[in-house]
Length: 54
Image 1 (cartoon, rainbow, N blue to C red):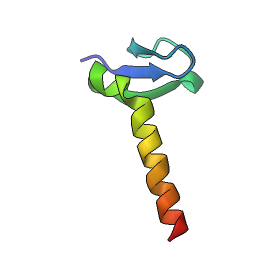
Image 2 (tube, helix red, strand yellow; image 1 turned 60 degrees about the vertical axis):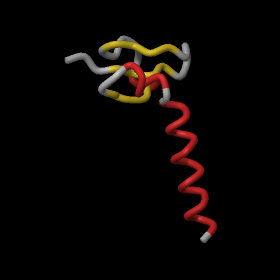
Image 3 (tube, rainbow, N blue to C red; image 1 turned 120 degrees about the horizontal axis):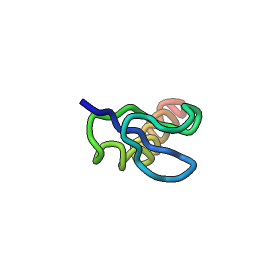
């Protein structure tokens, strides 16, 4: 089963990590999950920021 990665440099989804690991977010089980990688990172960062303010 392939894994999907989001490349933060090219803004493309890669099947089975093709780029340097420093450019990738993942792995994800589906292409759709990988396409939403930056949104997930943003949501997590906002949640952590909210916890720090408490």
